[in-house]
Image 1 (cartoon, helix red, strand yellow):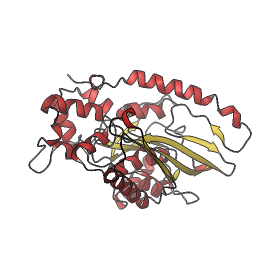
Image 2 (cartoon, helix red, strand yellow):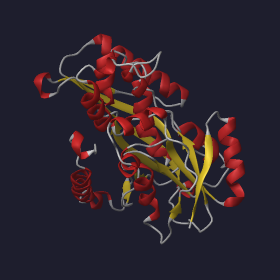
Image 3 (cartoon, helix red, strand yellow):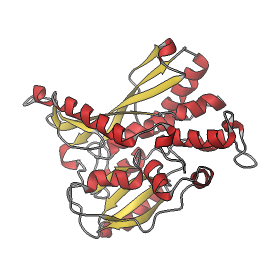
Length: 337
């Protein structure tokens, strides 16, 4: 039975490393006390925020992880920009912030324009669609220090203080609306690659997934970026809100429940997830190929839900209507208890 740990990823050690990093980061907060840029302290949040007086400046970092290794295998790099934007802009959107810029860093063992070009072209396309600029970045040629390429980014967003989504006012009966995903996004790829290598060998990416698609193509499906629909619901900077979003959860590492817990831990409430959509077919096939338990799969992959919106029952239908108008597939997946 394959687990995330079998692929070399230890979630508990990762959580401990994150805890230590945040504890050290907090040591710096006092240096801005009473000054512009004083940090807001929020344990376990999806993004950091700085008090800029009239507004909040939001900043967060992430990357595409080992999904880029799949792109290297099938030599297709033009869609990874959507994954990169989704990882950072959607984290910023969890507090209601409008992402205004993304800078990025490409670490590579050897600079190759045939790779850098499609990566950054895809990034530009994804940013333009979301009204985000790329003011700068870095390409670092590191030789044997890295194997292949690593791609990470920093998002910067702005947010009115009175529009910050905190998750502190959740109540029993609130509705959970799931924004459906298109695939794995950028999480759990170490397990994806481990299962496929065990099943098909080193050249697993060339194996047929179906009549028209290889496994490499099937798992490289680009991420849906939810930033735009969150802005349509919550309003961009100094725009009015259409729906009161009581909580927003980005389903990344840790899966649906793990990320919901990041907001539910502020309360004594729980979530009933009785109406989740069917997982994507590649996920179900990988569960079968790797004998992955349902619990392990739901802890590792998004299983069909990339973002969760929490709204009052009175605003659930309006939320679903706006999602549909914006071109996003969404459904009610449960309730707060």
